[in-house]
Amino acid sequence: MTVPATPQEPSPFVRRLRAGERLPLPADSVAAWESFPFEGELRVKPLQPPVLPEPARLGEDGPEECPTCRKPVTEALWSDDHWRLDAVGTESRLPAVVMLQPRGHHDLTDLPAERAAELGPLLQRAERAVRSLDGVARVHVNRWGDGAAHLHFWLLARPAGLMQLRGTFLPVWEELLPPLPDEERREAHRRIAAALAAEGGTAHTVP
Image (tube, rainbow, N blue to C red; front, side, top):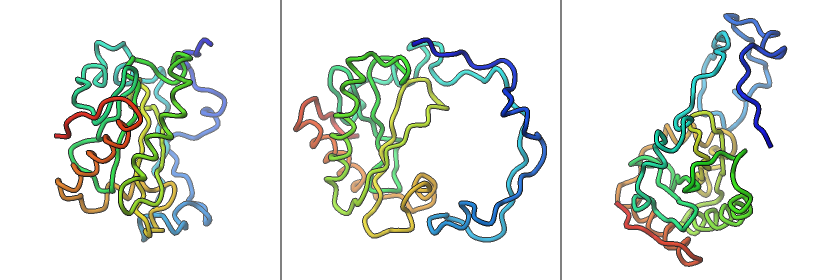
């Protein structure tokens, strides 16, 4: 399937919006949700004019410029011939935050059929591995794709009992909570890698 190029001109949807105007905050907006992390008076930012064509994402020009492709697979927590699971950054404010990525330079739209067939079972394995940690109730699996052209899935562990962290805002809470002690973070990574390797692939040394 051919993926359409980024539009060069605003679509009818975008043209209906009034750049520079501040949108009203509806009474039943996300700010009223129990999981919303903030309180107090809020204002919606004014809409900015569209930027077209859109700027290139990281790795858009190919594997030579892609940070994921240039990162040695031995720096991953786990890998097999076609996939890798990486830690996200050098600290975590949840029991675990990891990222599943193909080793080949693909986005979702051009993922080869063989890799696409592996994706569902691998996401299941990765979720089970994260759920094997103590005190994890759920694993949120997120894919946005606006920052990098190399396909990546975020897996975020939601701590058991913290009902306020359920749902949409878990990535926001991850920015606000105190960081885990380094040894606790490394031990979580070791356990996740070992759980994945028990079903195939290689667990790498956790830095």
